[in-house]
Structure formats: structure tokens, C-alpha cells
Image 1: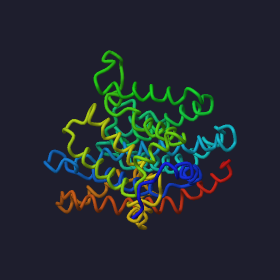
Image 2 (image 1 turned 180 degrees about the vertical axis):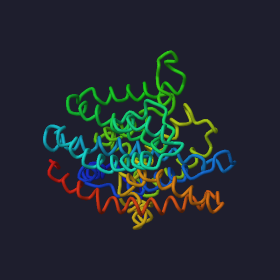
Image 3 (image 1 turned 45 degrees about the vertical axis):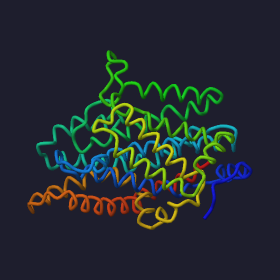
Image 4 (image 1 turned 120 degrees about the horizontal axis):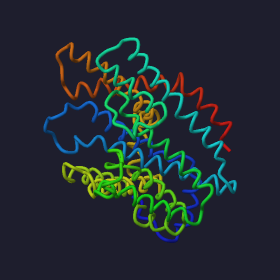
Length: 359
């Protein structure tokens, strides 16, 4: 068994970290996150259950930590390599990755609402403009489009942070920390008189900023050495995963405030443990083909799973079934198949174009 790393190998380990093009274990974490979200939306409300099984919504927070870490890491490495950050190329790559599948999903939802009107059609028509312009986190969303709140958070993050990474170097980490603190205060009742949307009283931008802070920390040799010393043992990711599950389970029913911050911290440590070294205890299970594929197409699964749930629930109602497990299996498998088809037949055409803007 590999032992914990020593100080002497830290510079070499940091050099390897900076040269790592893809962190394979993050697809495994994405798979866990999206399966948690699908389970959360497959549950029947109002039934008692083991607390961890009612915390699937935290999968979005894990997504945020991963996203903030990856985007900031890519930007920092581009600046080190070329001396600057090419914002035009960055935004073109993001557009090619995000927009095609996103607007395809919106088009399908809109077509269903307009071509087959039902009781939910007026609400979808009302919410569609917010989703179209990535403003869903600023207004209450109740329909199939409610999931677009998290995508709005990501787009707003992309709109601000990469520009700051380009124009500010010395004081940006401090500014990001201050922003993280400010975003974490509303759930504690701060700024009660400000007309903040309900979203800002819940999770806000905290997890994604935490991921950015982690990227800056690991990009710095001295801080990387500290993380490597604490989390560099090959068993560390497994321990971090168990700790994240334990905290998610043992926190009180209302996770607003300190409980959610503690969960976010555990997610940050889990991501860090999975990237400071690649040969760790979770590498084998995270390398399994189903886990890798679910992680790779997790964006599509997130986009389409509410649509699949809608039709799966209708079919189950006709059959008189209300089983959570059956709904989860139907939604999970059906959405995976749909996301794979979307990725291979539609999204891949746009992803190939990303290579033109790789530098």
C-alpha cells in the first residue's frame, strides 16, 4: 500500500498536478452528484425516510464545487502558459458546450406546452423567458423548468469570474474569499431588508466560489504541499467521501446556515483529495464504464431528467404505481439513454468545434 507523501516529493507532485489535463475521478463525483439529483426528483414528498436519502438536492452543490474548481484551474493554467486569458475563446468554448443541449431542452419543453396545452402550460409560458436568459435563480420557478436555476448560477458565474481572473491577479484570491463570505451571510439572516430573491437566502454562489478558491489554493505550490500532506494518502478520498456522507446525514433537517457550509467544506475536501493524486482508493470504482459514462453525460442527464420524470410519472399513474424505486430506475435509465443519444448525435457536433478555440 502506498504511504502518505513526504515533503520531499511535493514539488514533483505539484508539477504533475499542473500538467494533468483531465482529472479522471471528477467524472465519478459527477456521477454520484447527478444520481443524487435524479433520486431527489424521483421521491414522493411527505414520507419518512433515512435522512441521507432526502438530501439528494445536495448533488447540485457538489456540481458547483467541481465546476468552480475546473473552470478556475483551466483559466489559471492558460494564464501561466500564454501569459493571459483569451476571454473570447473561453466564452466560445462555453457556448459550444452549454447552449446547444440547453436550448434544445427548452425547445422541447416549449413545444410540449404549446402543442399539447395542459394545466401547467400557463406557468411554463411564464417561466420560459427567465430560463431563456439565465435568470431562473432570481424568480420562483415551479414547472419542469425549475432546474434551470442552477444553470443560471453557472452562467452568471461565467460572466463575472473569468474576466476578474484576467484583469486581477494579486488581490483576486482575497476578493474571492470576501465574495464567498458575503454570499454565505444571507442564509444566516444577514441583510434582512435587502430585496434578495429566495435563492439568495439558501445556497447562493457559495459552493462555486469555494471551488474557485480551491483551484487557487492548489495552484500555489506552498498551499498545494499542505493539501498534499493532509489529503495525499491513497485512502484520503474514501475517508473524505464517508465524511461528506456522514455530515450530510447527521446535520439537522433544516441545513440552512452552518450545516450547509459544513457540507460544502466536506465537498471541497473530497474534490481536493481526488485531484492531489490520481492513484487513490476511489480510482477503481470511479473508472468503471457506467460511472465514467454517467459522469461524462451528467450535464445532459441533468437537463433532460425532469422531462423523462414527467412522462414516467404519467405512465406509472396509469398503471397505479407510485414506487420511488421504480420511478428512480425509470427516470435514471431513460434519462441516461436520452443523454447518451443527445451527446453522441447532437452535442458532439458542437464539441468538435471547441478545438478551434482551444488556445
